[in-house]
Length: 175
Image (cartoon, rainbow, N blue to C red; front, side):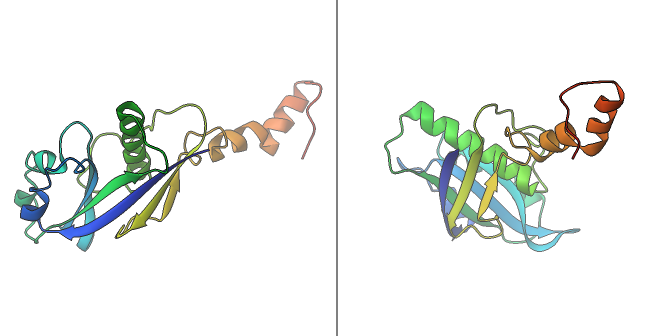
């Protein structure tokens, strides 16, 4: 299993976050504000800045037109005991974004919500620090890992086993 560790810090005001343009200002960001249905101080958006700084990416959004509240931004960066080359880092941050999106479904997000698109080993994202409303641990296992609940339930369900036995399939044991 691959573990991706994300260290979160914040809160930043929107002007402060838009100034995050240094050499380490790449990663994930959470946008919090008020929502007319979900209430105050809720997670509205989760984004990634993998090829441009967080500050540059945030200037491309116009959320202040969508919510009257003063936003709070939290920034997440990959932590690793090993030095990651740029491709490994980019792969981890993009996968972490998809897994967190799948787990939390922020209101303003509209892409990367239907499928994680990862095959292979199970992946777990561990959120550290000031993660705000994010769960401390989320994984791909629930949706697409080889131990995904849907995969094991469908493959080993009593109804499927009974159906196979009724078809005369040999070697299937009942539960």
